[in-house]
Length: 375
Image 1 (cartoon, rainbow, N blue to C red):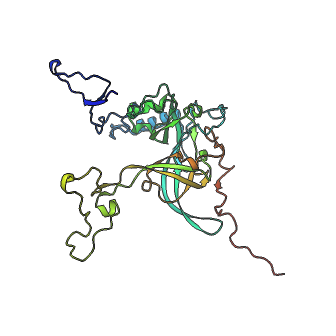
Image 2: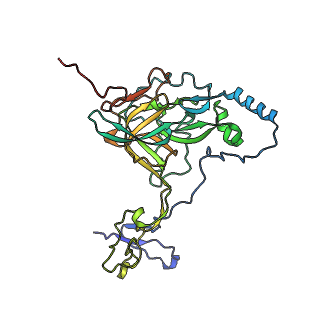
Image 3: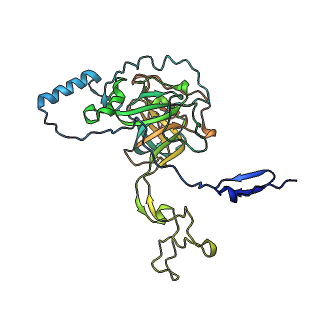
């Protein structure tokens, strides 16, 4: 029986090389913790804002520029409670109704860009009070769709470079703004679709069957009460913090010989052969300002007039007025059991439906106290 031998591959001269008989297993030693250097952002992530200078424009020139912008993109308007512009993209017409593909649980829909408004209490029909987080969808429109064969992200995982070749990329913008305050290259992303420049952009990986034409509006009715969503946002920047606040350490006793070490982390090293600090040890450092994902948040109420979503709980990342991204949940036990609006909801008038609640949530329009006449 031949003996399998392991050896490390080195570059020896030919005179010093030793030949072994039998099958060989070559072992090439490389560093596994070396990461690739940071690379540039995607091509659509250009310099957004320009330097705000006076440009020595007269009052007549400023009024002429405003008229030209309004003639091309529409007049300023308040839509769903957001100060925006009355945008009518030429590609918006019949962009949702023309899709005749039926929903499949394997399909992946687009997400939304929302603003976190704060916390608000809600009540259930049994009288229990629950805290919720208010998220307002701010003027979302589809900007561009990149099919899977053309989507080439600048950064790919090492283990599986072709991990999502079956998904396309949908570029969504939120909150229209005056094009005078953006660079010419940034505005070029929106001019071909006849859209106003957006303050915020987001990429969503979707199935080709869920693709939408540029200019399609995305509303809060994209989700329904009772659905579960994932919320991605940047946590509050706490700055440099100690181990008690950053990692929840208990701290040391107040007495029994403890001197000036009440809030310190204690021992972090080892003795003997392991006399070093291991990577990943919990120590003081910068806290917050990182993107985190809150999975499986339940929707209790949706206001279609102002595009506001009530999400159960107060664990959504981000501070007040911060931007968050909403997705269909990836938790297997909380995915859709019934078909959702696919690929997205249709535009409805504000008078048709104002509020929609989950079944066990108390509606403020219902009576709370009833009186019965004495018999």
